[in-house]
Length: 498
Image (cartoon, rainbow, N blue to C red; front, top):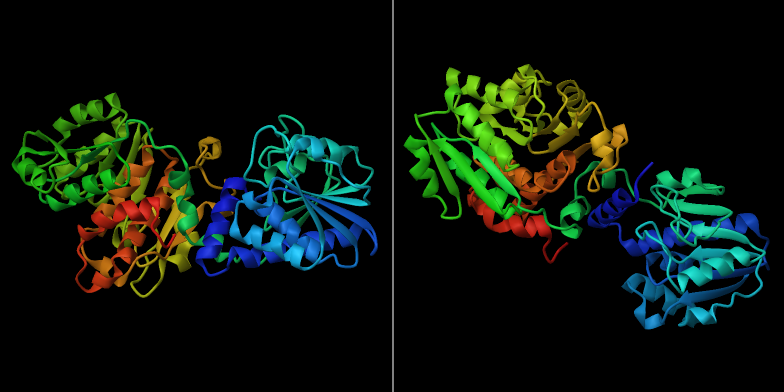
């Protein structure tokens, strides 16, 4: 089962894998035609009521496959307003093929012919809310017709995720939905056919541009703040994480660091706000003030970059997580404490292979691809109870939260089915073996976590970090982590190739 939003993501990912939407439309239209043939004999009258989007385009294709029937196609709106090139091409093909078609420009002109079958292709799964004219008038006309009603993907006016209809809606006898069942269709008094239209499993398993839809199409987060707790032995790591958070959408990026390195971190970028504390490294006596600051401003925390592994620093990291109840990306020197900590915080942990094994996860040799061990990583994440991003040439993102209630409830979350809560990212280049790319990953996830569900943010951040390297592929021989910062905005919000 797949939600409407997740279906849109998978559709985009399929296109990125080289399966054109035009090809998928051809398969969808063929599936609709098969359903019509199943309910009516050749020579029967078929009226296709189509909208101006790709749902209508599917029906235009179906009309071409019904040459043995008396078919008429009724477009709701002017032909020049058809929304996509591929739908427009298929509308034009109907005219060249001599198939009866008309454009209905006024709701008062909706007048369906007597028909044995009516195909409802007005609106697809991506449209919600009450129908407006001319669709509302057309829906009433369809329901009044003495005909078998076949809906394309979802009956117009029905929410594909809930099955609810806030206003007028088509009462379909049969529904042809594509790729996978939609949750709301179970509530309908209609026969549902799930048609395989050729979308490969890889479009769901591997992260792609479709997984960026929540940030690219959703509203920006309000007052998104990231608070990086890092530095001590190292200064570059917290600076990279904090800058990446800004490039991924954070409004403000703070770094809490020991006074001995604060000036050095500030020197990396004037955009950072560096807050120093006494000492040479993070220690337990600084924790209470840091937690208070983070929670007072609802900051997303990045804990770990450049902290080092001194005993008192490890103890401080553990105490921070025990006390903190917000959202945090736990990286580098701090991930080792997570399995031993009881915390109310919502965590995204980003271990590399070695750190994953040290946390109690699977030991994965260098020659093995993480994607081949994704099930083991998912099991470990479930035992841990947090989102895990295991980093390597292939990254694995697993949602290990034991309760999926928050996951399902969040508007930007992806499918809640257990098998849909693990993703693999192949984005990136060989140049990403250079140090610091894990720090940019942590910051990117944090910048997205301010406005999105933890799993969705982890998926988007992981893909975007790798995609940023791909956008710089001509420099892969000399790539350094700071190069990714310039490409991250394009990777997050899209570039000309996406």
